[in-house]
Image 1 (cartoon, rainbow, N blue to C red):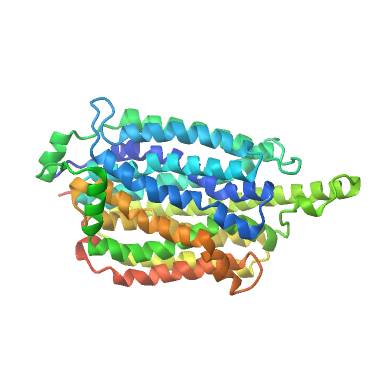
Image 2 (tube, rainbow, N blue to C red):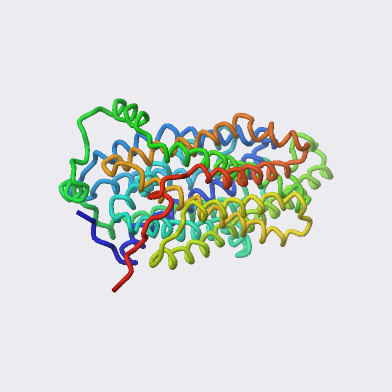
Length: 461
């Protein structure tokens, strides 16, 4: 029996919490490296400091997927309890991250923040598959991408907007500027409010209804470790092939999140982060020189964050166009994804030749097209290839193909590959570009016709 189709506002409400989730991810992705550098980290140390993010995803997502598949609350349903718990923890972590006074403290908050975001995020992916029939799943995932784009653009621009309103970018050595602290506080508030909107505006199907729609009982009696181990052995071939595409895609974006700020402030804005240990702070002239360079770096980092917001804006526009198209017609998910990834790769590759910062608009526009596709097409293809009663667990296991490339990048993959091209931080962006092009070409591995093309929504008579 087919699930009933949902209207636009039903799909919007069930996806709206992703706005808050993306506020958390965008602030983390756009400004954690800036926080690390402000606290004294040098460029080559930054990827390793970021390892918390993929490691928590590797551990948390399959567990949350398993638990949410087997959760049912008459008041909050199956997935929504996890939305709520993750939102509360994430909001607390977001608020306190910029108050870190040492690198170990900032890295610790990153662990807490990323684990908390993952508690909310994984069930959101499964909710689309729970609520929507196959014919609307691409539409649902693209709607999430539209909302994610809005969140990325606004959140990435927050420190610059707060600075324009008069909040200072200046701070002593080793202290995060007030503009960043205010931006993270706003992000914490938005995270919690948007999740609450989805929690109270969305109704989930009961286990009995899911059994009726899927034609079989939802869960077996196996324990968590047994179910997860068994599910690894049942991974469909399409997931493995998508995993290759995901590997190169997420290697590229981890490289951007961890190194775009040092790369672009140094290469494009010519305002690298000053290293406090190289200045004699007891000398008034050297102390003033540090303050001048530090303020220039903080303002350049604001600008980098603002330009990074462009990729959120372009992914939003891309998702909007794709939403309108997929609501009525078929798409070839494979070729759409391939084209978008290659476009994003070109956006990264051109950064090595940019001297005018405004050209970053074009770079991040192309990157946003890739990002919009990454957030929708792989999940739409996967959801047509797995057992519905294990959707949450399979979505969690699929996260393995997201976090492993990030762990490899953090443990030296980015530093090693970029060092082959030269010493400048900007070479990391070249590596990201090459990885995205490889991700695009890897789509040729996808051959499952149901995953590649599915009727998105029946045409009206």
